[in-house]
Amino acid sequence: MASLRDLRRRIKSTENMQKITKAMKAVSAAKMRRAQDAVLAARPYSKRIRGVLGRVALASGAVKHPLLAVREPKKVCYVIITADRGLCGGFNGNVIRRVTQELKGAVTEISMITAGRKGYDFFRKRGYNIDGQFIGLGEDIKYHTAQEISSLVIKKYTEAEYDEVYLVYSQFVNVLVQKPVVMKLLPAEPPAEEGQAKEGQAQKVNYIFEPAAEDVLAELLPKYLENAIYQGLLESKAGEQSARMTAMDNATQNASDMISKLTLSMNRARQAAITREISEIVGGAAALE
Image (cartoon, rainbow, N blue to C red; front, side, top):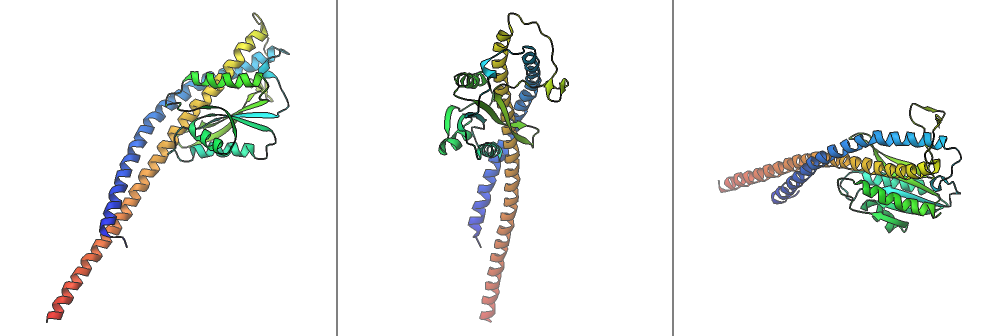
């Protein structure tokens, strides 16, 4: 059994750790509320631009655009969004696990673009080809970051360095649930707008393009790509803060349980020491009689 000094030391260190996890929980809760507001505010625009892209692409007919070009998938790129830091439970591990599942048995050439240090460190150490890394994104996601990632993706796709591009991120469902999602970015597949879909096809609308359908798509498709990446960054940040808040709450509760167990052990050890001393005093008194 550990000595009283060791038990007191362990209780003190656990209490100090509990204060840290409790403070981190409070900080993460505040950041999570801001991140949640940001992702909920961005969802309507993201949903609308996807619907507009679906209708315009159908109305434009056989108009060709580099981001709509379909090629045999010999070179595939994954844009992977993780956190820069840990202490957020299985948040990063779930995204990385989803990517490894996608790569299992892949016969194509794989490249990656990572946003977040955890994903970059994991795949770099395993020898994957990383064409771009974006680290230190901060707590407030900037649209400029999504533009930089989108520009890199567009450049390599139009130069035929990539045949397909997928976005992997953790979708924010609620405070307790974050779901890893794999979304196909390129070649752009115009989605059907909700409420106007039938058997997976968007409702065709007759548009008059000015100056031309090619020019409209040239503006719309990069915006769609930027918005999809930006939405993924926002979803990931909200999920990260929620996961960290939950992890720190669990750590605080575990610290309380550990303190209770250590305190019980300390009291038992102290009681045993007192009982032993009393027995020694009684035994000594009996020996003197």
